[in-house]
Figure 1 (cartoon, each protein chain N blue to C red):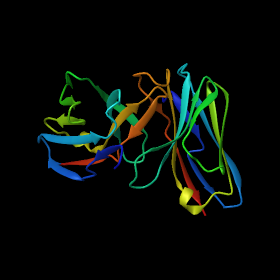
Figure 2: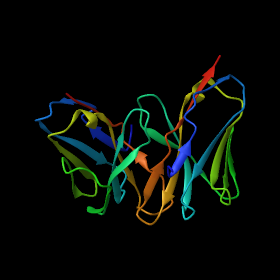
Figure 3: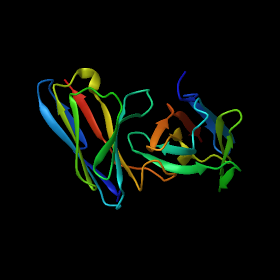
Length: 110
Length: 114
């Protein structure tokens, strides 16, 4: 079983749609969780951290369910500029080892 | 302008060549990393350095040899690579390893082994 699993997609949605991505992780001792965004042929960049209580940043909402070991990302009112690959990332242990999921590709269409 | 700079951006090398990838971070971070990103695969952690000391080597073949002369610079020396080593190699840094801190990535070196 992969340490971090994501549906690779692609998710094709119209502008203005709401889209949700899920991610599951296998190590129950994982400490911290993040969503990164990677544009085509670019480096990954932090989108948001994921807190146990859930957190929101504008149109983006991240949630963590430790019992079920999954993380979600909700994007409301999708924009063309949201088209990218969204990487679920889990921090394991004290060595700062970031475990990346394969990424979920989002394509927002006009 | 990114705080993590990688050179070269693109590299084509033969299987008998020796080359080096360079990474420099201007963020005052203490931890630096090498990742490999192959097509349709997750990023794979290769090496972790904390304060110039290697703290992790994820079973990487010896044809990849990292070097961290100081906390701002990280190199990846390459020799006798295989075509399957063709990938995007990403350098990253963070304030400390093992803490809830953001990792900043360089733009990567796209390596093609012919």
